[in-house]
Structures are given as structure tokens and as C-alpha cells.
Amino acid sequence: MLKIEYVWRELLYRAIEQRNPYFSIIQLSNLFKLSTSVVSHAILPLKGLGVVKIAKKRSKIADIERLLLFWATRRNLQKDILYQTYSSLPLLEKESSMPANVFPTAYTAYRFLYDDIPSDYEDSYFYTGDIQPIIKRFPPNSKKSPNIIILRQDPYLPGYKQTPLAQIFADLWNLPDWYAKEFSDALLAKIRERVGL
Picture 1 (tube, helix red, strand yellow):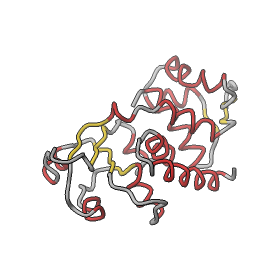
Picture 2 (cartoon, rainbow, N blue to C red):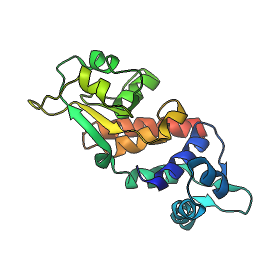
Picture 3 (cartoon, rainbow, N blue to C red):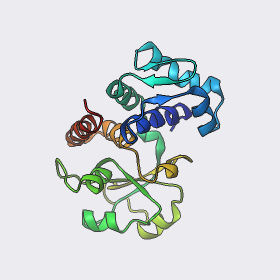
Picture 4 (tube, rainbow, N blue to C red):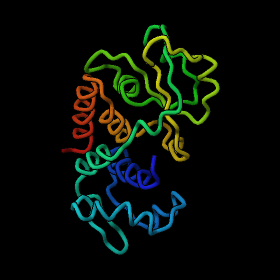
């Protein structure tokens, strides 16, 4: 993930999970140990689109859904792929065999969060900061197309305890599978319900 994406994710996390649309550039700068110019660079296009309203002391997210779609269209999931392999294990067994330090995303995260799925799926996506336990459990296998995709975890993801809804949505948006749209549409509906849209 790019550093400016930390800012977008945090704004969305506050608005969706915490139902708090307020922020300040200084606060975000301190949180991510970024210069105020980098944070301002992340905020500038949002201000131009009317997605955020900037004030001296307390700025506000004005349009959560547009911010969500803005990030989703700029997310580059492919660049975060750390490891991929194929496993013949049944889907649920494969997912439950992952080490405890991973963060599910995309289809897997949706199923874990809501205990239902809008469509069947084949591939499992996880973030990790330590690839070795995964390679040990799921060694390289290129006989078939990969169905386990491991993504590079950024240093701030563990602070959220679980993958934020906005990140799951942005990841789903970037997947090529036909069923990715069914999942992203279903998650968007749940986000809208949560924030009262």
C-alpha cells in the first residue's frame, strides 16, 4: 500500500467502524509518522471532489461512499502480492488452517464477518507480516492456478485488530473474478446500512 492509502483507510475506518467523520491533518500526521505535506497530498484530491471539508481545527468527511469508491479505484492489489500457491484442501479447511497472525480480506473476510456469502468462491486472500508459517503449511505448488493469495501487510494494519471494512471493499473491487462484484455490492450495502446511507 502507498503511504497516502494509510490516510484514506483511516478516514474510512473512523467514518464506518467508529462512526466518527472528524479528523485533523496534524492528528493523521502524528498517527502515521508522516509529514503534514504527505497527509495534505492525500487529502487534496478529496477536498477537490468535495469528499472532505477542511477546517483549521476539525475537518470532516462529507461523503463516505465517494471516499470509499475513490480509494477502491486507486488501490493496486497486485503490487501487494507476497506469495501465492495452490492447495487441494477444501475451502473451509484451507482457511481455518491459516496461522493466527494473518488478516483475512476479500471473500474470506466477508465470510468471517457475516457468516454468509453472496456467491461461492474459490480463492482465499490474507495479509501477513510473516510469510514463513504460511509457506510451511502451504508449500509452493504451481500445478494449478493459485487459490491462496498472501498480501504484504502494512505496518499499521495490526492496530485495527481486523481488516477494516473499507480495505476489504477496496480489495474486492480490485479482483477480476465474476463473483467479486457480488461480494463488493453486498459489502457496500452493509456499509451503507452501518453509516445510515
